[in-house]
Image 1 (cartoon, rainbow, N blue to C red):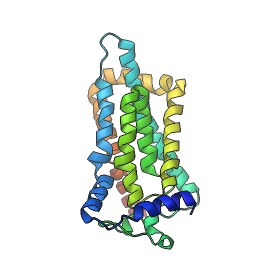
Image 2 (tube, helix red, strand yellow):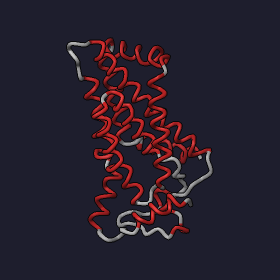
Image 3 (tube, rainbow, N blue to C red):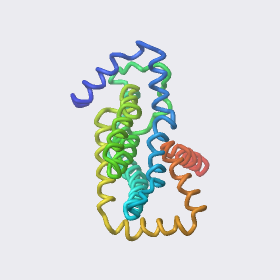
Length: 236
């Protein structure tokens, strides 16, 4: 392990098991879908319905950016999974016996066995989301960056679910994905603008799918992942 990861993990782990209630709170932060995902995602709904009455073009641009942000979140998760499956396997700190990691209260090994920690799915997704929101509103985006850093990502380092460089690599993937997709004009032409038209023509179907998409994003696609693992077990 590199010195950067080792020093930060050692610092956080030095506080392990000093307070059971604090660590249960940190664990809840890492697992609670409302706190770690749903709160920042509600901002996409806010910007979608945030009408600028004096500037219809600005309102339309906001809706385009909302859709691009959702697409970038999906794309960043896909890229992160491809990297995790193709790059050399990296055990999570909590499962790496060589680190002698002191396990905080309320967490065990089994849920994370067999899963490479590099890069962090949470970081790729959350930083893609935060970057998309930042492009809509710098002040709101800065708040989201701080929120996801302290309430979503730092707990995962403290609990030994990720190395700091897992988070940094995921952040880079998420930020670059959001920036690139926002700059590609063909995406707006081929995907985004037709979806805007479709949302006006078939609002019931559009908002149903919009809700389902953000619901799964808030849970980090846990339901889809669970269905995938169950299907694999049935097939095997």
